[in-house]
Amino acid sequence: MAALLRFVAEQNPDAARDLKIQIESAAQSLSELPYRARRGRVVDTRELLAHPNYWIIYRVTLTAVEIVEILHTRREYP
Image (cartoon, rainbow, N blue to C red):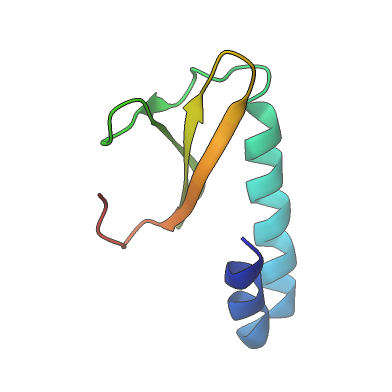
């Protein structure tokens, strides 16, 4: 996520700050409701739209929510 935020900050530091807040807020919410997002296109993953342009791809394990990737919505996946 750090590389993504640096890239956005080069063009618009305020947008990078807002994006960080939105992604972190969405990620933290998964601790309470880990299954609220749709099933992922990759087996055993889930996909949460954290921002209009970014997905959080994650897995739910017995003890944690593991974030696999932050992915731009236009990027081909998987």
